[in-house]
Length: 304
Image (cartoon, rainbow, N blue to C red; front, side):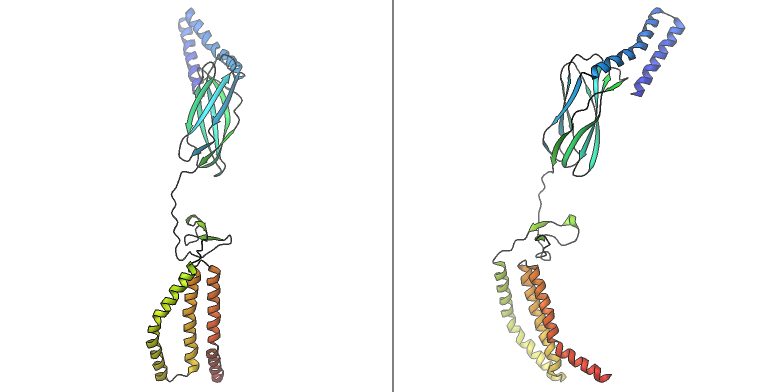
């Protein structure tokens, strides 16, 4: 606006120079009119500002990325003499993201009711509060701006655009339930790469897993015979006492059964059960190895 004032002042100065150079009556009249016009416009603009009211309406919801249509309505109780446009400084505050953006709008007025539509793109999704920081009437030459009462703030909700989400439960994540009873769908600690879904445990999954494990054990029985003969021959050739070999074989058997039981619990979605089976397996292995530990301690004591 200061540029308009500077330009108008320069025009008045040029007109005054012409009056000083030539002194023609019409130039004097033009100078008087040009000098008095801003004061007349300012007085009329103040009068128009008292009769103007602004309101804003917006639809209650929108979609992220789409333009939101703002509908302004400017009402004046009487004819406007000096006001030719209205200036609006809008503030859009996103309550979800805590971000605020500003938009300046200039609307050209006419006598009577004035309705305008202004499309804007809201800042992200969430609840949006649209308020007016400043509202002012401008004259024809844009030399002055007279403030008017701003409109009441309005609220709308911007919904996120539809996204097709694909969730895949990995084997490592199955059964890793949190404190809220929800199960992770991806392995990792980054919250942006994890989704929580309700744990779904089918009733037949545990029975099917147990049946598959028993079938695998039955098929492996034929392979255990030659393996047992090999260990028996190795023990006979090495002339080791059963005090050493017995606990080792027991620990090996316990570890195999523990791995099978833990896998069954995880497949059934029972993380607590898998942890309990693992703990019991460790305790049983330590108990089976106690004779071997006593023998080692006795040997160490004899050496000392």
